[in-house]
Image 1 (spheres, helix red, strand yellow):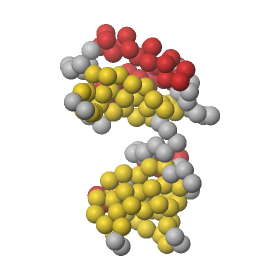
Image 2: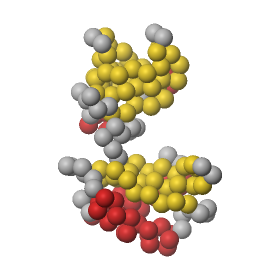
Image 3: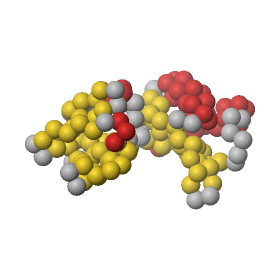
Image 4: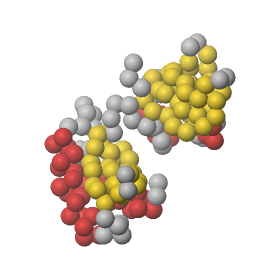
Length: 150
């Protein structure tokens, strides 16, 4: 996470928790020539537009007052989504046994994308079962891991 993402995450997590939400991730990225601050949330049973709006209403004045972002930006609060990216060790632990897609920086066995079942996570290494075969990809090989709807 960037420094700004870390600062915003520390502000957003307690606010989300008060609403019964889990802060999933914070992104501060440049898209189409403008900065975007995107907060992803989750909760048991799924996130609705009312949840996003409630957190946005709490965080917007907090961000204005703390002013952690020097540039103008677009502020969004969104569901983490059904096909969310897994980033932290706790994400991988929570979704062991789930269908995932692993994207690699360089091809292995002629492919850069593998779809299978998440079987393990150890120090950044991701193990999946794919087409009856087990693959373990080291942290430096993995570009992205996300849940997959099958």
